[in-house]
Every structure is written in C-alpha cells, then in structure tokens.
Length: 288
Image (tube, rainbow, N blue to C red; front, side, top):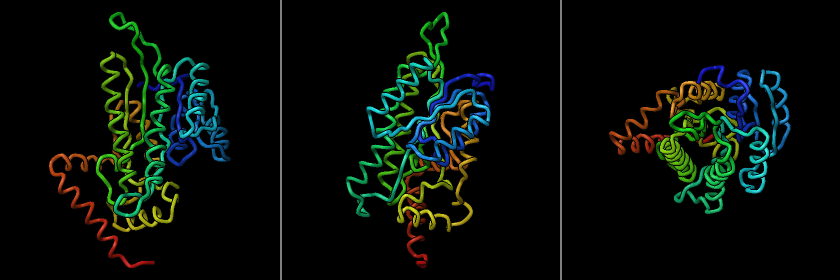
C-alpha cells in the first residue's frame, strides 16, 4: 500500500496496550489513521490513547475489550463498524501463553484458556467484524469488490512445535491455518483483502512474566547465545508496517527464522532434533 492509502482509513487492533500492540500503534499513528485500540481496561490503555493522538493519528478511541466475552466483542466491533462503515485494517494481536503440555502436567483448564484467547477470541472478532472488513473498491468486472487488510500475530512456535509448550504451539499453528484459509477464501470471492501473518521469535515483552515457569523458560532460552537473542517489540512493529505496505503474506522476526520453516520442509527430523537439544541443554544448566 502507498503511504497516502492509510490517511483517514480505519485501523482496529486487539491487545493494543501490550508491548507489541502499543509499538504497532506508534508506527501506524503517523500515517493519519482513525485508530481503535481494544484491550483490557487500565492506565496503559489510557496513556496510549494520548500518545497516539500526539503522534498524528486522525482519530483515536479505546474500548475495554475482552476476547473471552462474546457479547462485548460483538457490541464493540458493531459500534466501530456502524460508526466508520468500514474496517480497513483489522489486527488480531491479543494473545497469551504458558508452559503447558501433556507431558509436563498441563491441565485441561490451562490448555483451554490458551486456546480460548488465542484462537476462539480471533474467531469471535473476525465473525463480528466480517460485515465491515474492507472498503468498497468496485471494478467493472467485480462491482462488489472490497479492499483491506487482516493482520494476525502468530509466532515462530506456529511454524515448529516447541517442547513443553504444546498448547501455545497448537494455538499459534491454528492462527497460521486460519489466516491461510481466509486468504484463499477472499481470493476466491475476488476481494483484495490482504491477509498477513506475523511469526516472531521470543520477544522482550511482559509476555514472559505471566508465570514463574514461563519466565524461567525464557531466561534459559536467552542463555543459549546470539542465535537465541530476544527480538525487540519495536523491531516487530517496524516489520509489521513494512508487511502492510508491501503486502508480505508471512513474515518472520528475525528475518532469518524463515529458515526454520524451510529446513522443516526438507527435514522435519532435523528441526525436531535441534529443538530437543536446546531443551536438554537447558536442563543441564546449574540452577540459580
């Protein structure tokens, strides 16, 4: 998309006040968009609204938003849709994660919470937003054609299963599958709805502070050296904007992580071996 395309367009993002969500908002705000920031209520969301206004957004409004509340999801999305008529960019960014697998004692309740937020939540948002996704862009051949973007935050864990994080990996794989399916469906219907999937490596965010187990996991991950260095939320946001402007269907952060998916096609066994080796080496590390 050309830079001028974004001016006055409607941008809706879930998980807006998180580390990645807020950085994405900061990068899109100077384009002069009409921005709707959806997240659980709190000081961070209120402060972000002020900041985004100062950065140049044409209009900014925040809504208290819980993807696990179907009635609230329907009400908020409908309110935005009726006001703006179109949602030009819908960014499904809200998500959670934890150490949860069958072999490490993860409970069905823990599993369901991860799947509910990361997968069911996206389904509910998309279902509510469907009538408003994309602006009318008719052509002589396709008079009902619409134009817009759907962006999804998945993960590198959505491309290769991560030991001891089966529930999280499952949820992120599901997002990739959902995005791939919807992309084809819009193409079949002759709409120009660009579907973009973001697959970052572990990032320097508060995500890893959700539980002591998760924090311990990522601390050991970091000790593996240069190749396992955190990516920064601002770097993710830069590439999200680039993916939007140049329509990159799927991006990895850091970029060279696309090799993970490539190697997996050639040798699924090799990728599994490398991931298992990482886990075993962490087990041998001295405890603090």
